[in-house]
Length: 201
Image (tube, rainbow, N blue to C red; front, side, top):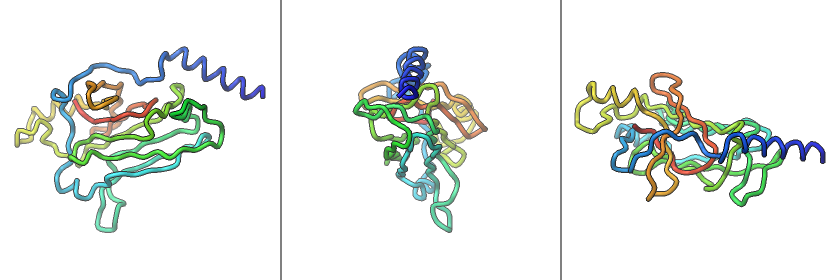
C-alpha cells in the first residue's frame, strides 16, 4: 500500500513539474503550409501500412514498420515506436496503469503516401518523466521534398529542418515537437499522448 502511495506521489510531482502531459511545442502551421515528407512511389508499394503491439507496464517494448525486401517484410525500417518500462501512465478512460498491465497500440500509415502516422488508442497518456519515443527514418523517402520535380539545394535546406509534428484533429494546425536528429536521416521525438504525427518542415 505504501509503495502504491509513493508511486502516485511521484507521478503527481512529475506532472506538476512538467505541466500538462504534452510534448514540447515550438512552431505551428496550418495543413497547407506544412511540407510533409513523402514515400518514394515504388518504395511505398512495399511499405508496411500498419502495425500493432502490446505495450506492458514494467517492460521495454517497441514496434517497427519496414519496407519489404525480396525475403518479406524484413527490409529497411522507416518507423520505430518505443514504450519504455515506466512509460505507460494513464488509459484513455483515465485509470492508471499498474505493473504488468497492458494495452494494444496500433499505428497506421497515411494511405496517400505521406510520412503521416495515426496512433491509437486516442487518449492514451505516457509518463512525462519517461515518455515513449517516436523515431522516423527518411533515407529511402522521396528526396524531392518541395515537389518541384528536381532534387536540389532547396530540398537539402528543407531536409536539414525536418522535425516531428503533431495534429490533435484534422481541423487543427500542426504543432512542432522538440525533435532530435540522431543521424542524417533519423529524427526522434518524445511522445506523451496519442494523436496524429508527421515528419515535416
